[in-house]
Length: 415
Image 1 (tube, rainbow, N blue to C red):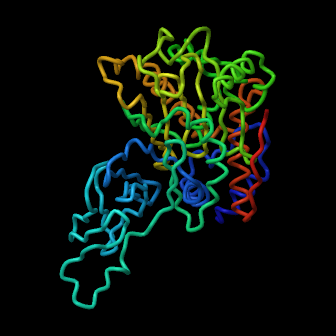
Image 2 (image 1 turned 135 degrees about the vertical axis):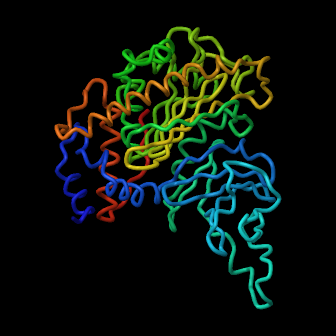
Image 3 (image 1 turned 180 degrees about the horizontal axis):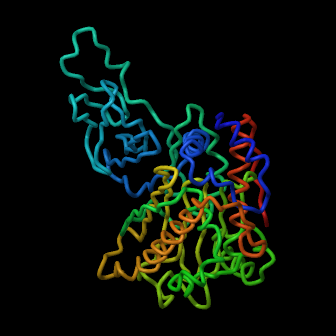
């Protein structure tokens, strides 16, 4: 079977407003096409500048078949490289994170500078030229405290995303924050099921009692339309923008990334059971108001985010297989906040730890049912699942364009 032709045929025949055919969620060959056409070609969120503050600090990540290392260089820049030694291919950095003056392959001790150039290779002969065997670079960009990489030889332009997100995120000074806690869970479901579940709150009342104490279930808050007609939201935008915080909904022309600031319920300030602050020290010295709601950021295929006055919660989606997805959550606080004095870790993390586990169970039950021979695509709720329909539309359009080598439109704004 020609998998590309089969996928393209199903994309063209799909019914708008409905879930996808079964192979999109469970087929290993479809998953390989997802990797090739999206994950190996798009900008992917990896982590935060504040995780690599010192020279030589590094983190590693696995994207499909590609191991990658991201490191802070001597010039202060953050760079990314294929984590594969130019000698015989061994991983150079084997830990999830660390710090080193040079990157040394553990196999035969080939030694690389922090800019990726090969500094030393022992006993390779007099005619060996080190300049030909530096680590292969991976495109790397930072914006608003976020680190993105792209595995493509010719990455898409990063500038439109930077131009959209930085005015919203720079006031929160995430570059000067610190990660108070990090967790990774494995959800036994396709990465698209993880995203579909995230893109609606139709399921929240029945599944997320902790989150529902502070986060609105209204589709105008979680979806992609109607926010500008919701008086509570527009009032919140006006209040936040009066203190210099951009807040209105804005979305990329392809629907791949968007941001907006949304109010929390009643007098809630943070994602806690009480709605009160989880951290007594504000996340940013530039923001002098507590009730700013949550600043949302979505960037397909890797991240969704919540930035509040006292802390931020960031999420990274990483595919493992057709039926497994890793979701990494990080809680960021002011760099000077002290655990046990300014915040309690259990209070800071409780709501999203519980919500993540509930979502894991939802995704796994969803995946289990989709494996049934009786499964067929079902309709999304026009009232509550507009965000899900938008995600599926983005995915389908991107895959169809890339399978037929089509182009990309520009940014549009909703005032």
